[in-house]
Length: 337
Image (cartoon, rainbow, N blue to C red; front, side, top):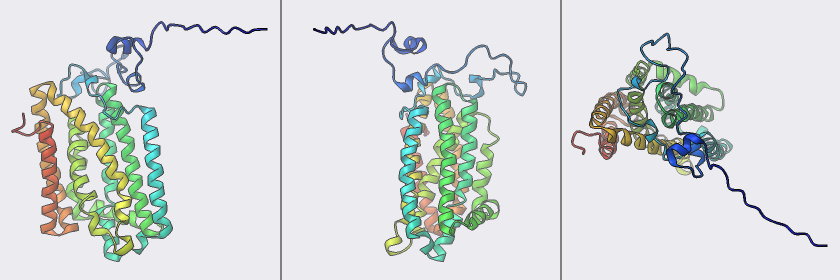
């Protein structure tokens, strides 16, 4: 008895969805393309929002930035929901190992009183800044246009809650899970003079209505200055001696890596918008300059409190210089081409 096995190939009628094929051609598409492009609702909106009857519920006129194709603002990380959750799960596993090591060895409890108070004053109130960033990116996700932009903003919005929780856990490690450090940090955020200027600018963003201005102010300007100043320059002032010297650097590794990753997305988006037209470039440049000056002035009292007047001013200048270099690379300084 013989068995004859025949192989028959079946040619697919199409390789991807119709809307993806119309944009990229009828060929196999990536998961990012299928989960991103041309998903923005454009017709059959039912009714105009009662709170803004001059515009559609999804309307490109909500921002002064004009784009021929809003899907040009693609994410270089290629994050869609699946890849984003997988990436964050891996990062969380790494952060959990670091936190568990610090907890087991009780490193933060062994910091000196001055260093402990420095962390409570200079770092933990940043959890409220992260909550503000969550709110700001929520506006970008809600009122921006095109899934390429809004889904990345929505992911960033949830990331900011994760960063706030990460900072809260540092506080709990510091006080033995009592929450006393978080209460002290909240009082500092609401009452301490070192934080009030930054708190004012965070709250000023809440009343801005142009989603791209909010994106520039939050994810380009504020994040760059806070990353360079608070997360990088303040940390040596808090580290203990001997074996404990790297404990804060270890705990701040996740926020630092997140900011580096987010900067790739923000830079790519802003660069494409600036290249679209000279009017876009001028508007983005004006927003970046105005918010740079506002946030730099707002961070000065905090920098001086943590590092001292001379060292604080020097650290802030270095953070501003780094931001100016980045803006020049994006074509958003007056002399940039």
